[in-house]
Length: 455
Image (cartoon, rainbow, N blue to C red):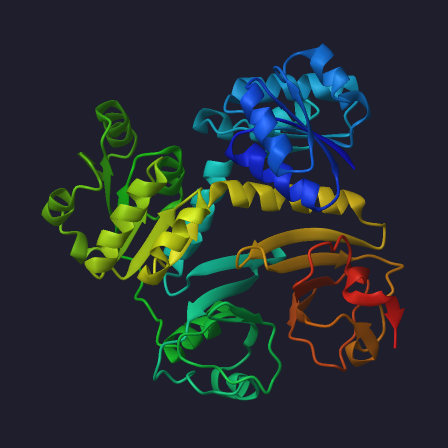
């Protein structure tokens, strides 16, 4: 596909690398020539220097013939204007990043009336991911499928816990309808079979009803009590969205923000939240606010290093749940030994959503890619497909399908029914299939088959 991106910042840079890696023809536009040059050097892309609101520049970048135009500059207004121009020039699909909370309620109107295919808000997406974790704090991460009916959670197996030494074939009999889909042991990652034996220190991704997943967390020695109080470091856009998503009547919340104007604005909007003006990395201030008494600490400043420092201090103070926003994930290798728990990366959330959209465009009429999550440093993908008539997987027992190596079908969703499939189950037209794989180029459900073939 021919894809044009305007804006070479954090999100644009990530998209350039991800889309080029998937063999798309990518053109990057940015007003800074050094940004364009750097992206040309690190990714297999071409570039143009200038503004995405310049129609002549968009024409020279091939926008009239492009399959996807993506606007991810730092300015919402520039993104919207450039997207409208791209649509008028003939771009087949237009994706726009809009970050201002004031625009959030207008997103459907803007999308419907401006010819924009997809509008995405990184801060809102990040806040929604954090809200999931706040509601289920035992998990390190949560991925949701089938409209929120199916969840896959990441938990740590504690040494000496019930799961330590348990064979996977025994897990369902002990803990109910759950399935261990992925195991990370040190640097090794497994999509395990029934004979796999769990060990203390493993990180596992497991799926099942939330009630059963709570029992898994207890068995893994990773159960964390329900969140009743949380302290947020940084009054960023993410923090504002999160406060709107949080049950503030039942959770005591404190926000620490160094900018007086931002703090006062938050206090005025959320009069049921305690807002402190100060430096969230100041350990004496955190001690004054009794950091160690909070159930959850969330670091959301705009500076990764400050978020890491605050999180490490929370870890030292034994705060049960720590959530850290980090964009430069290479920093994590420096603090890898410190169990930082949940890491939220807004640019990665955006990239995953856009990659899913692009892959869905590439798919045939036999299926539709509905969800995509890339986890464990992008080494594993979790995918959800809707199966349409004509797919090669329909009506054949799974044991008779020649499925690719190291691939797991975790779920079949059929109407209101959730199926943990066995070899005797079949896939029907209209089903939603959730698969786990090491491969990175699946556009449609038939990609789960070796060469599209059956046994």
